[in-house]
Length: 225
Image (cartoon, rainbow, N blue to C red; front, side, top):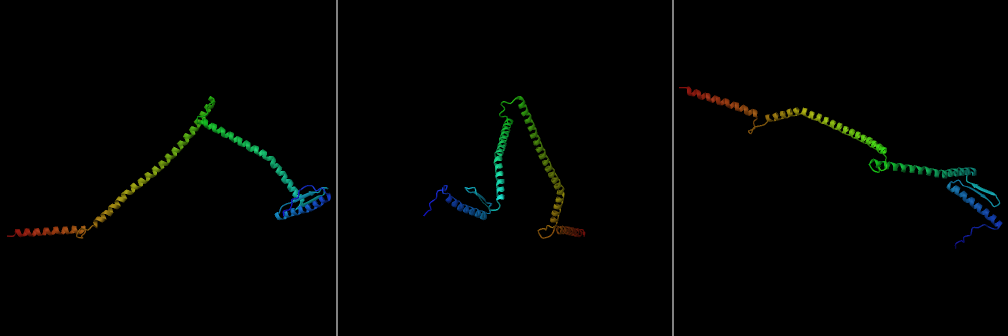
């Protein structure tokens, strides 16, 4: 059966009120001690009775905890006092940045030839000078890039010419080596009957000498009576 919840209100009977005070105070101090031991917390408890009697509990030192509380309260008060100031500073910075952005955007549009209404001749002349200075820097940068690219192309052309000259110098040596290889191959070519060209030439010279010998014998025979 659920316990009926008792209404919390002042006890009218002085004796009953004192007894309840003593019981609840002991229970409160016990809970504070348990909290300090279980959670390793600094706990300080101060209670004044209806008659003005002081009862206190401190897990370490009451003065130390009070000083700690005072320091924390002062820092908390300073933070609350500084936060509106910091907020105003951030707001002013934000407003200033927005104004600079709007001004820069407007100036860029004017550089593009937009929103020129309301400008005086002097302002237009100043804008013209700015555009001329900017154009001069653009052209100067472009010329530098062109010069750099031309220099790189010239260096590549010089490298190609050196490579071409080196290859031309090597060409006679390559042709000479090729001719020697072809000549050596031709000397070693065999005829259809298995003889070399040198052997064939020797045979031809021998045959011609034999033909000359036969002719001389025939002439001698015809001259005899």
